[in-house]
Picture 1 (cartoon, rainbow, N blue to C red):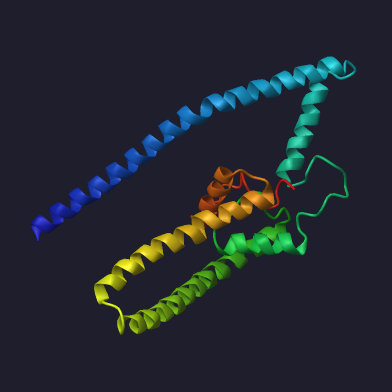
Picture 2: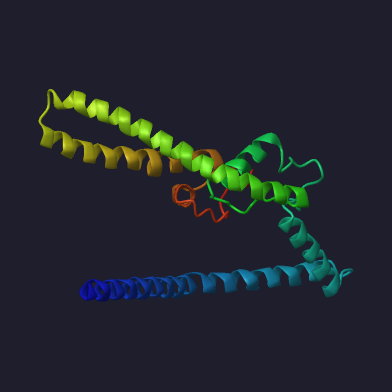
Length: 222
């Protein structure tokens, strides 16, 4: 019993150490990759503000800062500051359906969220019921696919050697899975949204992994 307990303690310590190290490594690399670009963007924005004040001398710095604050608050409220009041609603049926899907799948892009008190309350209870329901649906779907693949495999085993089928099945699984999940969706998103293939691939992976940063969302820039 004692050796098992010691092994369990060492394994737990190893997992904690590896997890912490992985987080520290990720933080360091993200900082090196992104901090300089952020600084350049910030400097560019300040330069644009100075040019704007130069071209429109009737404005002063505080007035421009207040206007920028209004734009930021509008953006945070999911109101597009460009255009006018005839812009498409963020909460038409298709957008609301899309939002409901991101809630139950726990993707949560963050580009759209309820602003009213009752909307937030409903979202909480909707997620509490919808997430388990979505997991049950995915479990049922996986069983259905597994059952039909089993029937297909047994049928093929009657005419093809067992070992060959196993190798073929793994190969087909990898190829078809890659095509369906990481090749076709990025190409579709690139065509429909006007993104590069890399941006489409990034969006597809972030969505499938349910990370959902919200920096790229379908229909966001149309």
